[in-house]
Image (cartoon, rainbow, N blue to C red):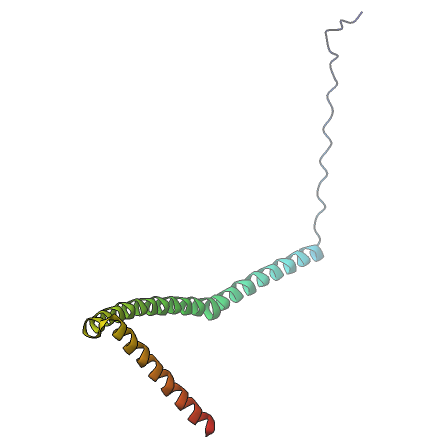
Length: 127
């Protein structure tokens, strides 16, 4: 009687013989060479297109962005400076004319400026 604790030795399977790859004929090699050539040409065209886009589009847009950012920063600083100057002038004017008088004078100057712009615009429209 066979011992149930022992396993039966399994027979070793024979490795399947490797099939030799069929030799490529001349036409297959030519087709592979043409495919490689087309891939190389495609890669070259992509690289050239990328270089042209980078040179003609990306770099000018980057320069424009930097220019606009610099102009914005300069404009903001100029406005803040003008605000401080306007407050200082208002305080000086308030010492001379009192605060209500300073507000009245500033309001009058703005109204005269608006009137000048309106007159100029009306004359241009009539011509």
